[in-house]
Amino acid sequence: MRGRRAAFLAAGLLLAAGWAPSAFGAELTGFVSGRRVSPVVFMLAALALGVLIQGLRVRERGLPLVRGVTTLSIFLLLWEFAVWVGLITTILLPPPTLVLQKLDALWLSGYLGWHLLSTLRRFTLSFALAVGTAFPLGVLVASIPRAFALLHPVITFVRMIPAPAWAPLSILWLGLGDPPAIFIVWLAIFFPIFLNTIRGIHDALPVYREVIRTLGGGRWDEVREATVPSALPAVLTGIRVGFGFGWVVLATAELIATDSGLGWLIHVAYTQVDSPTVLAAMTLICWTGVLLNSGLRELERRLVPW
Amino acid sequence: MLHGRYFPELVEVMSVSAFLVGIGAVLLLVLLARLLIPRWVPSSLLWGAFVGSATLLVWQGVSQLRLVSPVLLPPPTAVISNLGLMWAVGYLQPHIIASVSRLLFACGLAVVTAIPLGILIGRFRTLSEYLGPFLEMIRMVPAPAWLPLAILWFGLGNPPTIFIIWLGAFFPIFLNTLTATRRADPVQVETVQNFGGDIFDVAWEVIIPAALPLITTGIRVGLGIGWIVLITAELASTNLVGGLGYMMEDARSLLDVPTVVSGMVVVGALGTLIDAGIRHLESRYMRRLVP
Image (cartoon, chains in turn brown, purple):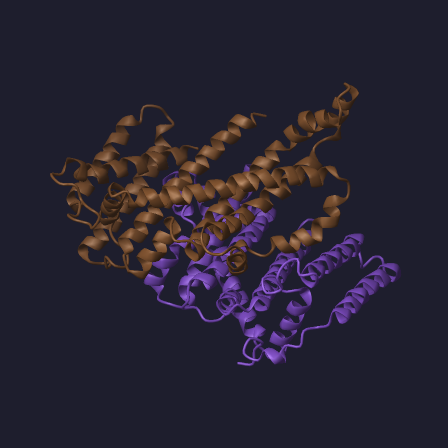
């Protein structure tokens, strides 16, 4: 938890450091990159950041944060420095300042935001679809005796086909655009949730159900009051695992089937050997992933306090 | 290349009656084996055979009754004959070898790098505080998204593919090793240290044996993710010749759907096989370790 918060803070402050020059600059950098943020400014900003965080170190919990940020700052500084003295070619690995500036320029032009929204829309849709199908189906299969044992071989086989392997077939079935991408991501998220739901229900103690029955509850009460709550931790684990798989597969799906989204942006920038944009999109994917993941953890803590 | 799509007349699609007879024969064989040597044939295998055959029959029926166009969903007979032909002319084997060797090499690399690093970072709390956020940032970028940069760094062909598979397989193994190392019994660790053992002895005598179940789980998850990333890399990068993903994408661009589906079947079968292999090794090694 601490490490994640440290990453957040570092990302936010670095973002601010990268944003500041353009915010205070005389002119807005346009779609095509203009001035580069001076490396000196960047280094000063990174150092100031370290000092600032040292100042925040009031309680004991501040220490891991300081350490985490130290590594990140040193890494970024070394990276910047290596490009600066010419150890690394800019094309192969653009320096952080250039990436931040690109991020800034693309963001201000609205280009990046549009692709981010496209990715998020696609991901949310697939995710909602996967949860909405996998959970009820899991409950259904788990509540019919022997159903899972019967389906197990077929499920195992289908599960072992990685989601991207469905891409060629799904393009033939559903055409190009959103449908195949959503289908592939749905498939990647579906199985962890489905299997964990079944496992959670099978592992639930029968005592709870018997208690409900003894108290005069019907079959529906049993499901609502005993089965689902006791399976919920496993289901949420499945959702987190599925989230991870979906996030990996989404970049692929966008690359193969669609014409928008951050994965697509990476691919197009790559074909134009525009490595700053590649890294800017990767950075944005990283931040979004961290944000969504910690949101999911928070949700898990709220939903399953037991 | 001798291949169905260039010489359609060569692909002699298996007849439906042969298909039915084949399914019946397999079922009979399994049933007979169950009756004769029940120890070798668990009931799950029996049920699996029945449900699998039922699925194949439904699939064939859907195609036969033209509920779905056979062009979009080729019937099992077409897929089976296609698989047979591709195997017979030697088209399938090189692709399988290319994919599996890529996967095993990259995952071997991930095992060799992730386990020592996991033990090191797990043993020293300060180190994990220093490196945690950094690794977390890298982990959150999906492995396929590294492909463009990897191609710029390592050139075309195998190296960038192996790099991103390594990246995908690394984190599950690393994180599981880390967790297992933190859970290692301090008394055992101190015992080894009291007898003059260094970190290598601690790792070898205490951490690895205790962490093995968790590490094996990590390896299985890592192989699963590596398999996903591998197929992605082969589908997405046009510069990689060979491999099952390449085969499927190539077939799709020629609307050779039976080959696409054959590729999926082979990928699924290989995934199952590799996973079963690891589980087998795990159970054998565990039995030797825990008397």
